[in-house]
Length: 257
Image 1 (cartoon, rainbow, N blue to C red):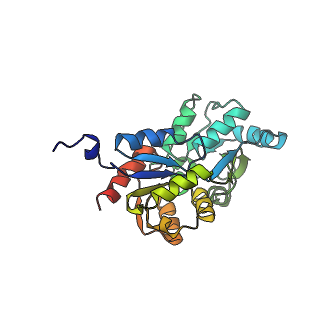
Image 2: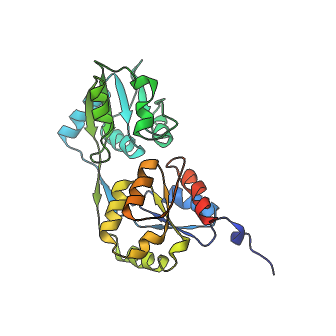
Image 3: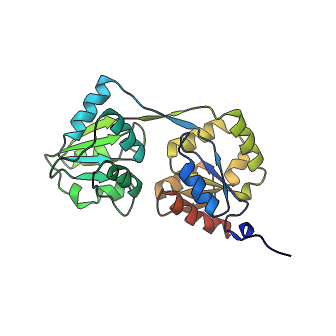
């Protein structure tokens, strides 16, 4: 009996749950398809993009700092809506991860990013080792861990924070709820791509099905792995980073178990 090429792919028959905001699932969908999986876009959070005088003033101040940090691709995109992005001569720009660095590259900014793509990795960069008396612009969103600003302030820097977008919980549409219920009938073949603690919390708030905790979780960082474990998930692997290819490379480890 012949075997189809699709059935030989490492994630054939698997469903990958994406919690990213609506409209941001395409890259994960393409990467999953290459491995034989399908993506179920759930989107329990949405992005709100403020466009008021206070936000614009905070961003202008942050962009004039001695060092500028962008915490995510969403932060770069939201900031670019409000103000042209460009590095001044001698002004270092830092990105939390490679995806954020690439987002800045699209605006002609050569940013540095750590190998460890989280706040600890960023804070370990030489550019942030001795920052006493310097102004550091932080282009970010409210919420999250809030580790960067307090640590930089403790090192003697003045942090100029510009919150250029926010994540808000939104109801999961009925169609997605129904598709999720079907997928959870076989949780051993479901993978949750976890890149946001706020999105996971929003999913837990809206979904009371205990079967959810039987799915596999691919966390983009050790911090998110710990959050998933604390929430009650047990089948967890940690990816090398948040990019779709990194998440799905780690996902194959769960599929092999």
